[in-house]
Amino acid sequence: MLDTNCFDALSRLQLRMSHKSSLYISGSHKSLRKGNSTEFSDFREYMPGDDLRRMDWNVYARLDKLYIREYMEEKEAHVSVLIDTSASMDYGKCSKAELARDLAAVVSFLALNNMDRVLLYDMKDMGRMLSVGGGRNAFAKVLRWLEHIEFSGEVDMLSAARRMQCRGAGVTVLISDFLHPDMLEDDTAKSGYEKLLQYFNYWRQRPVILHTMAAEELHVTLEGALNLIDAETRERRRLVVDAKAIDHYEQELFRFTERLKKGCTCGMGAYVLCNTERDRKKLVFEDLRVIYDI
Image (tube, rainbow, N blue to C red; front, side, top):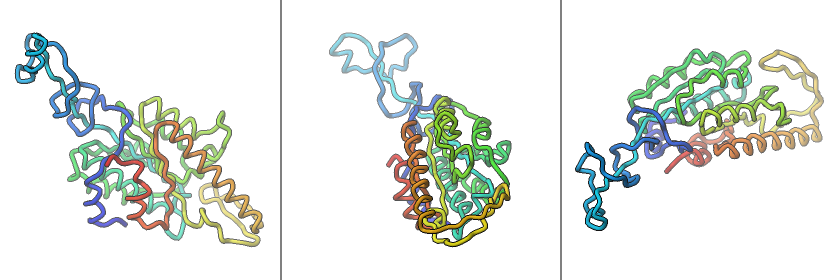
């Protein structure tokens, strides 16, 4: 788990956005609208009723015309966090479920600390959404919500994502091991993963894919005749695992992770492979560096 010092260090960072906000609530991200922030945007000619305090007298002296300075208005962005709560996530000596909770906590803290709104989703029950805003003082609500989510059964990730409440441009963070049949399929004409990214792009969401994998899944050490049981469907399969099988598995795993990464980066997003046994602070401040604006 992450400690207080870790969150203090996180307070100096913020999530990277790819779209300007179009919302109407004050926050810390640049809006499509003009307003009263301190960051200069452009000039426009004076119109009756404009605030004379925004008049640029230097321009008037040069051009003999009245011009108003316009500034970027800062608005609240929405950060959606979708957590895969299927049974396959509750696996590993260092559980993928616990890692998912930590990752969701990190993203939520970053958003709240920068006065953005967090929408947390349990992908097995999209109706059980937590919407939190108002700054870092609301972070305790996030932690309580994360403590009570359960990892069991199956998840239809594409159907779940389509039930998101998209309210303008923002960031969507998806935390999953992607061990679902429709996500594993590498035929782009059929792949649920590519459809998922297309959906996020349609709603102007910057996708952040946090791919959680147990150390046992990344580096297989089991050998011999094994009886494997699917954690979600309970389907049984007997396999003989030898050096050749492990080599084939590692090749397929590499192809799989590269496909996830390529699809995400093509959508102007970020992909991070998150190992459950990776030191949490190194994971947060080194591996996740690609999702921050520093």
